[in-house]
Image (cartoon, rainbow, N blue to C red; front, top):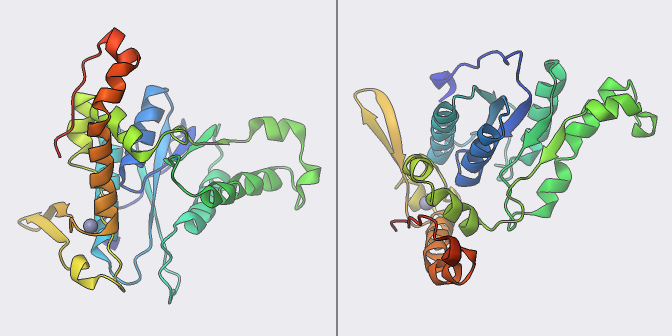
Length: 260
Ligand SMILES: [Zn+2]
């Protein structure tokens, strides 16, 4: 996938970075940024030392999602030798985000993440570091006790708009918006079988092509991440009666439900 995509320059009016893995919550983050009138760049991390097809699929759908909202996508490709495949991409995010913020002087406001209430807090704690690096560089300090107040006021903030919602609640919200769901249902990638433990499922991931052009990827349908997504859909659908009991009943919004 290395030659698949060439990075554009960072637009002069860019004000935020939305992290886009290709999954549903990251899609929701792009939507959140659009609705709030931000001018973000979408950032995707590509680190694929073992040629896992799911990594190619993630990049493919990250690009699709950024295009859907009209945001430029920037991809960080890692070329460092790695004997261990790092499942949590947060280490790479910390470096990429810091380099983008410091390497491009803009009126940076936010770094937007798709984390939900079920995600690891550890991830969130580690994500403080791009801002710390930004503050240190701009205050010419190695220790942040020396941070200048006016630099602090200008520093970008980490935002986690969905941290109070579960995966199924995020999914339910997106699914009720016809246009968003129509796209997201076809263009999010969540399948990630382990190469070590489930190589037979990795083989089930298919690249869909028309001529030489890649037009999509087919998920394995059986790995824990595929099951997690199916469960979220079921939970969202089963919430129908719970919602009727609340304010939804009074206001009677147009409820559209999800095909499983
Ligand atoms: Zn799968």
